[in-house]
Length: 281
Image (tube, rainbow, N blue to C red; front, side, top):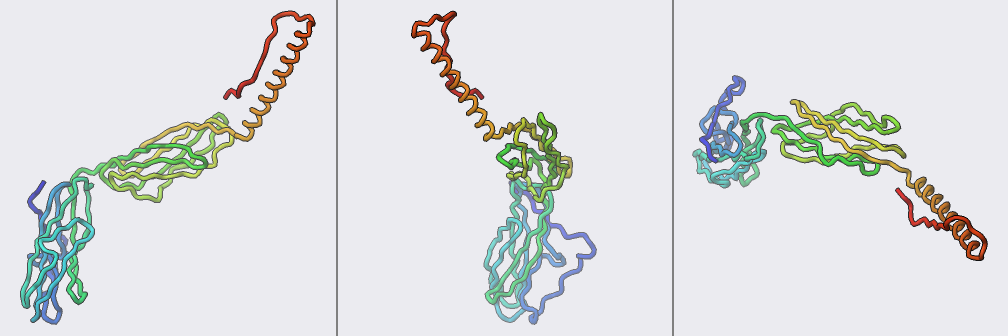
């Protein structure tokens, strides 16, 4: 959607001083159109297109050609290459396209002009995206993988987040992990997902309930829980082997007893057979 541009002069007294008039000795110059503005300033809601103009002034006796580019915010110029005759000023309109998914807040960009000799001049562009500020996040895909806890953080709000993490793990044998909240060394922009890991020396044997709690300034918080079972597989294999040996011995004993019965010896009660076919987990 399009909206009427809102081009405002910065109101701070400290920045209202007009730029000095360019002279031939200074060469060409770049400035916001209209004079007296130290920067371009645009304000609008997500999905809007804002308009403004910059001026290239050439007070010299020779024409100059400059190329324009923008950084920091999405800027589109009416012309990216401009030839300015001697002693002439050229006004170049441009638009700022605010993405529909842009989060409310302030952004800073730069408009730069460079001539064929490599001389460059810049103008600061300040963009304010209007809208409510919402702080919200979720913790997803929590899992225990070896000696790591893996999880995803998703920014569901409209403001960048610097989250804090607390970890708690309790099992049948007691508490194995109780990490107080600490700030994570990450910055999560709105709408972004971040995969993270947390180191953990888990117990060798226990059934553990794990809980992650994440908070962020502005009231954002979420909790995720999962369970994990830890078994020392070497010991478990030994136990299974012992059970298999015992079952084999039982099998042989029962088989031997049956052979004696087949030899014609008296046997009281029904004959039985037992065979261990596998370990029961």
